[in-house]
Image (tube, rainbow, N blue to C red):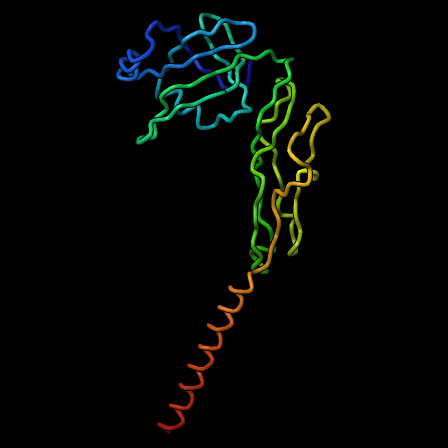
Length: 214
């Protein structure tokens, strides 16, 4: 049994402005297309698909169950309501599992750098997605980066540091920065120093006041 996300769909006849009727009935319109199939207008359960799409990225394989057949697909487009958090329409591309695809895969930072908590370092992030080409069967949903290994200011992770399978062709520049530890800015450091000096002056005044009272 497939471990992919599965979405049940039906063919639809309504198109254009008439699809508003489907949304009023709790349905979501969409389309599925691919090299080996004719484009098909489909309709899905709005509530269920909205929930499922929360965990779907552009590199997630989704099985569209349609007319007794299963179409492995990737999400190619998603239209949302301009004012409300509602998905209005989705586009799926049916793919062959041995085909090579070019996709953007999210980079996920895992853990916490001890320098951020212990030495007040600042974690600055850069590239958030990796532009790759890979076979559909081996497509990763994300690339995890363990930032607990960043221990000192100046420590960094670049695209070149990622553990990537030989099957994957990376188009993102290998020198692009993913995360780096930086120190507090001079302006912030000076501001903190001024705050400390003010506190010390206030303490001295309080001590002098106590001596006078005595």
